[in-house]
Length: 288
Image (cartoon, rainbow, N blue to C red; front, side, top):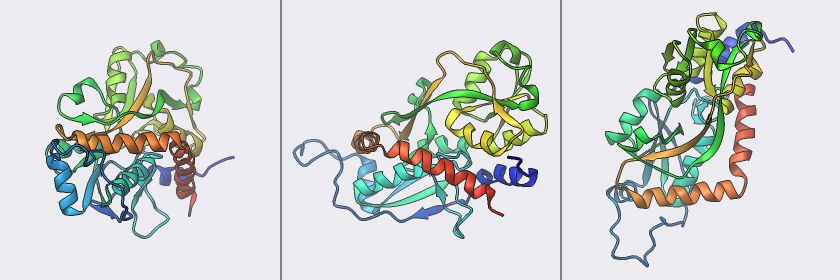
């Protein structure tokens, strides 16, 4: 099916429209934190005390990364929705507090976490060894392969990693995809931009030769842009896990998030959310 270019460009703009501070009300719940009263000798962390005192958990994210997180253009309030926002809401429910979402670009997100501006960061974050030096992480969720999007016109040019050597490669800035491109694509000129849609536009306009992206995320752009495709290129050890990031020294908060991740992995919610928000992202973009 042919897709009008103006709709395709509209889709690219979904992730770039973000509110500075977005609030979603959490459901009140009787669930308690993972640290039970049977361990009275263990003091609650400062973060857990703050969350309970304020009656809310402040989650930082970086929209423009469907289906993990993106702005819902079908609603007037333009709130951030997606897989990660479902996870964030479940964590808030488990703690019995409200959810407040603060949306920002990914580059600013991790510094906002370490600086105490947000309580938790949930944005398809890969728990790398470097990041573990300054923050703690939950258990992993949603493993996905790293892929390369190219123009269909270049399908015969880029079939293996070596074909990209010396080329111009687009990535989202400060991500594991940027690190992967720098490590695996020899002599490449790396172009890092704040949001994936911006890099997709660079690819469509011929300003970059390929885009290194998480498979789940890239699927949305391949579906909606009939001039783009996944290349045959395979990176070694290219499966990436996501995890929630938390300020160091808050093991009780980490335990709650881990319990929520396990529950929603076991009951199939992560798979359901992936399907639901993949369709939602495309449907939003296809609206007039």
